[in-house]
Length: 206
Picture 1 (cartoon, rainbow, N blue to C red):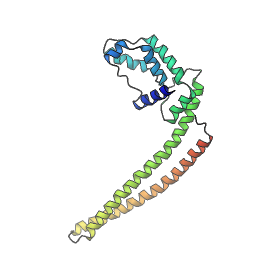
Picture 2 (cartoon, rainbow, N blue to C red):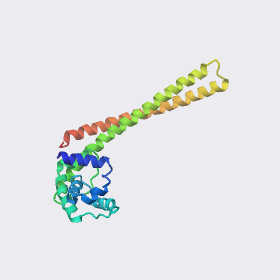
Picture 3 (cartoon, rainbow, N blue to C red):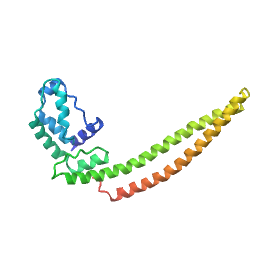
């Protein structure tokens, strides 16, 4: 289980684990092991093509039969409900790789995890948008303070004072818009949080 989880996480972070096999690896690798590792990470069926292209540079052709045998064994380990749920709840992609007899339970668990991931992501996205707008408000407030200084500075020219007033007005209007947007986002976030809490109460956490 730990090996499966590590491979899923590693391959997801690396963008489906692009094949970068070296010359020695291509010539000496156990293709059944390569297939098993791809299977246990839930990699798509065309993964062997990446290995073939990586090793073609060194004049090496993968042992397809050994690879497929290893991949089948790896998939049977990967395609378990607890791995489906873990893949879904972490937002990983499922490549429709599971054998027919294992796919229904795996996909059901994946969908449950994915549903939780989507709800958590909505809350997190709302938080990020709110914080972005608050940061912009802070920047605008700093600009207002600078513009106010230009307005009252005895050394400022009339043009500088006029520009300071305009900048203050524009910044104040933008701050008002941002605060209104934050208020709407906070309402949305509250709704998303309620949906998340409700789902957590009914979901079967694996």
